[in-house]
Length: 360
Figure 1: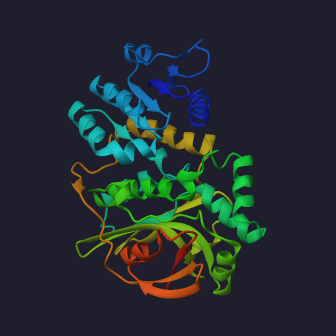
Figure 2: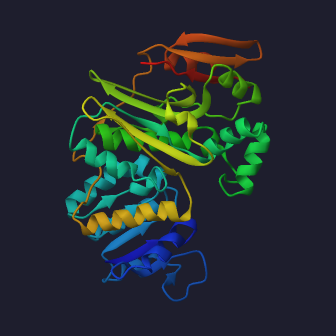
Figure 3: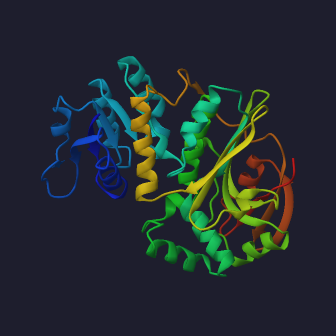
């Protein structure tokens, strides 16, 4: 397989190293911001014009120019794989349809879960038996912060500074701490697992930017651990989805997920819950998922998404749940739907709320 690589940063650099250890995965050219030498180039045209390249692997991030490069690659009849969750959550359905038209692959296993083969497993499961729930801890940065706020009694600012120092959080951590990164990932799980095309902005999302040690203690006082979790279900024709902090019940293994690890799961009436645990980010974990996608293409698997995706918007006013709420007026527990809790508290300055997980 002859590969054109887009991006030579953390993940792209890992792909170069891992592909270099194989006999049949060859990086022909790599688009980079560094000095162009050897296989490195600063011009996508060098990749687009190279007739020996049959597969393009993208690890740049962002929508543009990644989207334009993806379309150009697929239009030219090249397989395309990506680790770019923002691109896939916004343009995945369109790119998959183009790939099918051209008879080539569009895979994105590295866009969710870091090194965990979550979307790949979810795709196989969907084709094998019915699924009705997907979710998990899908962001290593926030899990690292919450873990250290609990285990080391750190403040939010201290936990964030530690995450940034270790390279787990960006200089601008908004995407992680506001839950936006997690929302994009659960949208991918919904698409792969249920066949629905959902916009990330339509998933009710509340992050950890207002969490305090007081909230960590409140969770601990109930025998629970505070985590940022994604949840989606499709039952009796109703799609629900949400991203928010959760007081994980004692029997829920998500509560024991430490440091920057992820736990992603899916559930069905026949298979029960199947969970995958591992590194949620990093050079080699994420690069390993990209290598896995390349191997999948060699084995004949060209798509993760079902052939037809249906446009959908999650219902926000279904089941009522128990919530912990803290505002300047104090703490309380209330029972409300996702829509109600967001309408009442999501925009209140400094407020924090978390779902109190109950046994089903």
